[in-house]
Image 1: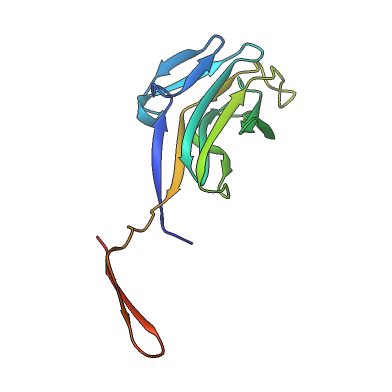
Image 2: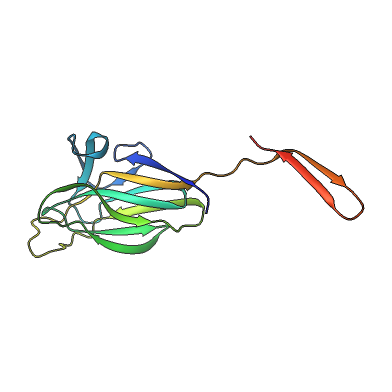
Length: 158
């Protein structure tokens, strides 16, 4: 496999598309200093990225419920964001085996509790991590040198 890079996309990135009523809160506990949450049914956030993988970082707590995760309009899983105590910057979902290309992830609030002790059905996003391969440079200055039984190739890379 090719080596890869990880690029952090914060919840306040202008390329994220929010639908429904979302609230953004500030704290040094959150990646990039903010996170966004929604309590309403079908509230969603969508992000289109280019790469081979994606991670979702969220806050887990008693105020959170279940979150539906879609990739390319297909439901992938239902993530439980409930925890008995607050945890920050939790990797709650990852998909690392996508074919290289453009993909869209969508997080949707089904307004369902994930535990009998949950007090709300919030979903939230702190950040996305996009995984993309480091693509090799295309060869330049390609030379072919034929001889009687073979062809020798040479080239330069940047």
